[in-house]
Length: 101
Image (cartoon, rainbow, N blue to C red; front, side):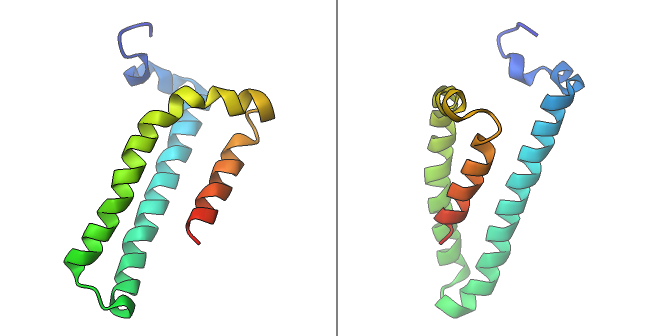
């Protein structure tokens, strides 16, 4: 597991915590993206936008989320050391919920 890219090693899924975290992250991602796609379909008639304009609006989310996902890992141990590893995921969900309003 000490290769050039150890996170891509499938043997990590033997670890129970890693497997549970991967499943939780994947299901949360699918739930949020699925919600956004369904939400676009319901809000399109209300806003009067075309499907192309809605798709371009959805791409603006990716322009923020993709660079942010690359910047987050180096800073993630700092809040975990301050408040503990059990408080960080609920705080992230609260920030996500606040950002939706």
